[in-house]
Image 1 (cartoon, rainbow, N blue to C red):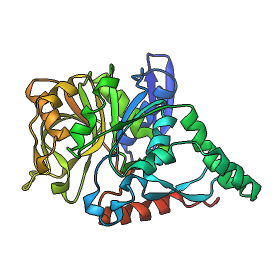
Image 2 (cartoon, rainbow, N blue to C red; image 1 turned 180 degrees about the vertical axis):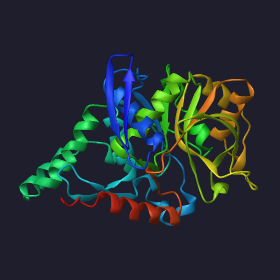
Image 3 (cartoon, rainbow, N blue to C red; image 1 turned 90 degrees about the vertical axis):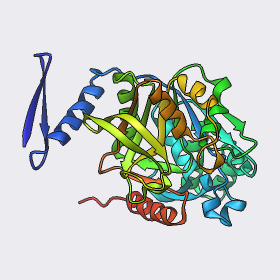
Image 4 (spheres, rainbow, N blue to C red; image 1 turned 60 degrees about the vertical axis):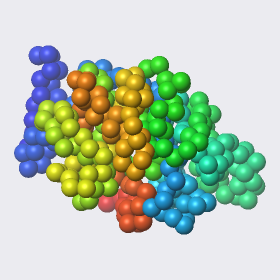
Amino acid sequence: MIFNATYNQEVVIKIEVKDNNVDQALRILKRKLQREGFFRILKITKAIIPAAGLGTRMLPLTKEIPKEMFPIYVRGINGNLCMRPILQSVFEQLHDNGFREFLFIVGRGKRSIEDHFTKDLDFTTHLRRNHKEDLAEEMENFYNKIKDSSIVFINQSEPKGFGDAVLRAKPFISEDILVHAGDTFIISEHKNHIRELLETHDRLNSVVTFMSQEVEDPTSFGIINKSESLGLCKLKVSLVEEKPANPVGNLAIMPIYIFKQEIFGALEKLLPGVGGEIQLTDGIQNLIDNNFSVNSLKLENSDVRLDVGRPESAWEALKSSYEYALPRKNN
């Protein structure tokens, strides 16, 4: 079916979709308008990436190897199949969306993360000398993004939880901030979920905006217990809970958020929650209780979440990323 959308009585945009899918037509229209500059997108260039967790669910492997350095399959810059640490994929996706300042929250045993994000030009020279041009280009592309960025490593001396990890970055933050877990990666068409999250946060004038997705086992996540639909995958959130023993639903909080400064004050007031840790979900509920605007953007059905934090999800991450990264055959 073909939809004709008229903007401001002057611009006519033709959209073609299958099966009379109005929601799909609206999403395509919004993306077209974004590209044409009709929507203002909130400009945030700084991201916090917590990567200090002990990874106990992946022991004994994580005793020496940070889970954020676990590999996923990707399609390289030359279209070839290759593997990258999931943390590198998170960094590159954010960089491709305009982020240039990165605060990595790390702890004991995470030295390999700092090493990986330090340029090693001798290594790329070695690759070229051995006629491994594709691999050299892959590494140089990564190093160019590092060079183009400001990267700070902040130590979380004790494993006190995701909320405490975010709080460690407070002295470096004076504006809205994106928080993205280092062990989770979203595959979405044209990397569009980051842009959608920024737009939702701006247009709804949120204090907190986060991604959400329906999951099979909500007891392993923070979940949304109560919300109101705002249309187009957007929700006004009024009740959240961290890892409930008896969840009332299966809509889980994905660890990708945008916060205003108020989150730090909320986290500073918290007592340890689930697992004896400072939980970011509890900080969000504190803001809700004080009448701050908290909203969520649901991932689209076509979006694929890769999570390497648990044995079963790490295997699924490998399989899903492999299928996505395979070179496409021309018909």
